[in-house]
Image (cartoon, rainbow, N blue to C red; front, side):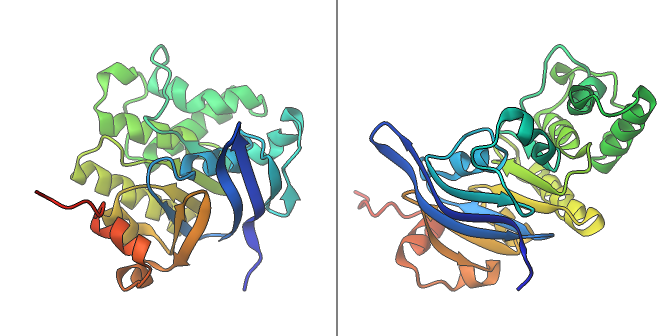
Length: 250
């Protein structure tokens, strides 16, 4: 097997008496798209925040491209974060900034590029998400799907090795969600990006995922391919896929 781009071992997170992550062991291989499924409150978004260093673990280990990131300071996390793009739930765009300014924000924050280079990178990122010509608009002038694509452009503008997606389909109609799936696949195929996608959209999982993880109760309960997901005998996962709460209908 290839060396994983992300290696997680024994990862725990606890808020008071609430154990959110309870010993996660997981590998994400370079260039793959991994989908993470699970019920609300199962630890999916919390796990994603640890991968970008936005949250420090209670215990365990996270290695990104061979570098242990648990315990690193904000300054030390800088080079790691430049390898990771993040698409937040809802997009998290700045309302007072134009599309171009939103996409350029992480590049300007890093302070590592000249302005002409930033403009070039922004134009390329907007072309990737098919929003060329929208640079001067504000988020309030865009549809929900367009705002999500601007957020994706911001996540990939620095050409990261890996992009983390927190519910990228939330609030989108099926056709717009499908366009996001195509973009995720295009990034993987054309740029070799590693994708980690937290989602509830099973339709999208079968379109984009090379591997699927079922995270429940703060633990990895099942891992397999999208095709293996269709035929799994794992009772809890089958109930999740079927949308069956187990409560009788009257």
